[in-house]
Amino acid sequence: QVQLVESGGGGVQPGGSLRLSCVGSGFNFSYFGMHWVRQAPGKGLEWVAFIGYDGRNKYYGESVKGRFIISRDNSKNTLFLQVSSLRVEDTAVYYCAREGYWGQGTLVTVSS
Amino acid sequence: AIQMTQSPSSLSASVGDRVTITCRASQGIRNDLGWYQQKPGKAPKLLIYPASSLQSGVPSRFSGSGSGTDFTLTISSLQPEDFATYYCLQDYDYPWTFGQGTKVEFK
Image (tube, rainbow over all chains, first blue to last red):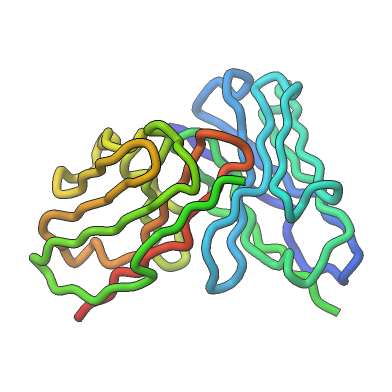
């Protein structure tokens, strides 16, 4: 069955960086575009970024453009999100997703 | 970016009630809209996509309608397991955008 497992979250100070990962299994990872979506504590869902199946097409939400970079390694069935210049308001659970399937998320906490 | 206006933000209902949630897009999005259910501490679950197509395994009491700018999610007879937060999501154009969410609470 399709599984998406995120990792790499944690606590970081404002201005810091993290690299989030998402490993996909149970499907042909290299055939699917992938997304990152986040949810701040007690808030709604916010779409963050998309990368096409081959890594060529990338799109970002306005609030993260220029600070976050989405990438993938199809040889390792892994999706990445490099999050930089972090702000307190970036505190959220970060989910990776493909059409119809979501991981369980990894928590990023930005605090001084 | 396309704005998705979802209403109501919350509602109180009883088991057996008919519940309707709406999403309005700031521009036409054809039928490129999905409805998600999220329970506390869990990842969202896709119920309907596009607009009116029920996903496999989703109970038939859920239905979706609409195209263009106005969309509706209906739960025909609310069940205890349906108390959750519901979101719409447009994937017509990037950046994708969610509605603000509707929390369905027990009356």
